[in-house]
Image 1 (cartoon, each protein chain N blue to C red):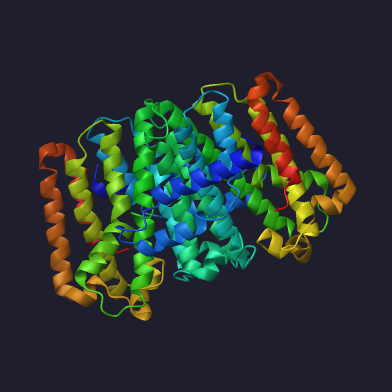
Image 2: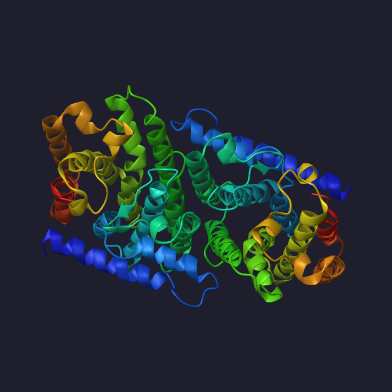
Length: 292
Length: 292
């Protein structure tokens, strides 16, 4: 199976699972569930669930269990997009090629749907269907909470906002911001596979750190080189906000070189898994080669 | 020990624990932690942690463990206040006698600090210090997620916002809204004690339902009869927003009678615990007698 087929298959499975996990009917507050579905279903590469599933596959974890952990992580990712897009944050109108949630519904609903998606992630993880061992499920809860919280993703988002008011950002600043804002969920995605497989997470965490940074450099390159139509979201936002990017600090050529080097380092770290890591190796390459 | 002393003692212990759990130093995103501390520390009755601690005490659960579960619940309660106060939601300037978080900091920080408090609640619960048994910690995670999510508190808040645009609210509507918006966390508070004590939660859930509703009726009465100075938050907001309250639908006298009856029903349900439930009985009485 080619990498693109494997990625598309996981995206479809994740979408189907989220569709099933988010009941459109029979809840009193139907509107908030409709908003959650708007934010979580539909287009999306589902890269984080894919990393969970492929990391878990290294250790023979049942695919349906890995998909549940991936769906929980995707709920957190989608909530973070909804809240980041709010007028008080990045004030974005377009996401995945359609109006952002607060544009399609309203601001209050977007805040609540984001809150509910974040909360639901922990409900999904704590359910016995995710893994038969309560201790494993608890490690997933703890790992996701740390990755998503003030010392992880939310902390990165806070630093990112603060960086908008500064003009002296240096490479170490934006590397730190991205390691929290984007990197923390990538780390958890890969770590989750090891947690579920009761395996040493160290090689996967190394891999996650490298591809997380490569992902963000690639994002900055796309932000300069692509169009809103191709990306399904606004481009050049960082420039408008006066935020330094990897491209600003490194230049386009060096940014490309750096991203490629990170992919090589990521792949080297998975050597011990041999052929079993082929899909993860392809995922690392995809992360810098993608056009959206 | 009198009820008031017991309540104040638990509030002080909860505050001290939250102070310790929220590190002011040594995190990259210091500002978001400062905002979390602003929202979570300081004044507050800490009624929900008190219910956790006193429910847990019925079953001999270690107080320091119950306090951790209570602190996690308080993080969720405080996050919900922060997000409810946002301009896109209730647009409040005053909370617990000081400027709301988005007034003291800014909107983006308030959104992120709320997100981080919610996330942190699950990190606190999943830590071994909360209970030695992973299966118990997992039940707490699951119970809190359900209580706080789209089928609980957030669902109630969504219905509450939708009710603002309707003028035909009836008693069953606002009873449903309040059973979700306020009641779900009261239920979890009392259930948590039974979970930690490996006991049947049914009597405590009955108690929680009664005092949750009584609490909201008392809130509606205070909203009419008290002042912003005494309450530390705006009054008569519901009237301004055109939202129906229990006082509107029942009248003041009947609202008072109904609240008192609920307190009696709550107390009857705890009979099997005998003298051990004395503090919870006092808590039920306090909930309708409080002046703020």
